[in-house]
Image (cartoon, rainbow, N blue to C red; front, side, top):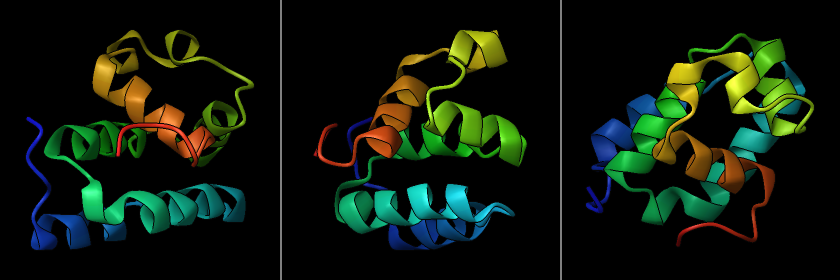
Amino acid sequence: MDELIDPRALSKLKWRCRRGLLENDIFIDRFFRRYESTLTVMQAQGLSALMDLSDNDLLDLNLARKSLDQMDQALDCDEVREVLSMLRNPQKGKE
């Protein structure tokens, strides 16, 4: 699933990623500025899974105050771990 996400799906994902906490929006905006042109379908699925979290839980993950296994075992998978790393460290990750 290394194929790139198509423009329409990317647009929908960006809309879905709008959050209530400015801090989360900063992480997400930085993520899209860095990775938008290289985002894969698998990474989009990981990001979408993270968007199911509450704003506070997402912020705790972004700031590494909590880990994925503390949140939900279903979230502790390769694609979510990769995207979380990309959100936390914008200079690292798959390009």
